[in-house]
Length: 194
Figure 1: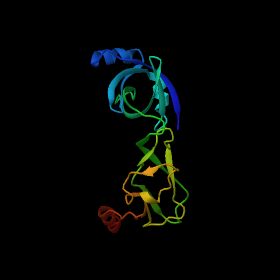
Figure 2 (figure 1 turned 90 degrees about the horizontal axis):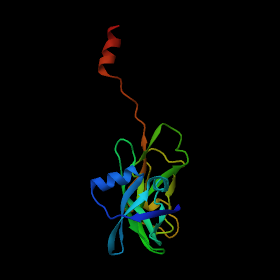
Figure 3 (figure 1 turned 90 degrees about the vertical axis):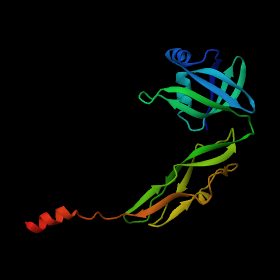
Figure 4 (figure 1 turned 45 degrees about the horizontal axis):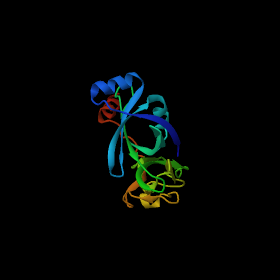
């Protein structure tokens, strides 16, 4: 898990015009909320924020007017065409506090011999973990699985200190039998005429 330090400025202007001015200066408007405190509106430098968000569930230490605030990203809005970050919602956390996040599911190993298809039913699992020890991903072994086999959420190994929030009987991965394509009726008729 990445622990990144970014300087932020408290924002006093709001609305589309203020947000556009901030983006022209390569800054991203955002809000910090959590722990029952008032929402704090901030602007963050665009490039360091973009680099921090490349890591899933990044733990960010914000320096706001000389005080430190530990946050994790909860929602990121991006420009639909350019992909630039337009706004970020940050959740304030404390060391030792449990948070609920989604982590990516990765697979390793080889399926049983044969023409089988692997279907990732769930690409992420919702878990609860300590804010400073959030796993970036979980890995599932698919070694030797055959058509009809599946792995449910409770069978996914989680790091210590991490608990599953997703329904434990939810199918995460399943193996399907490959189906041969049937020839089109029109193609069959053409070959019969020749």
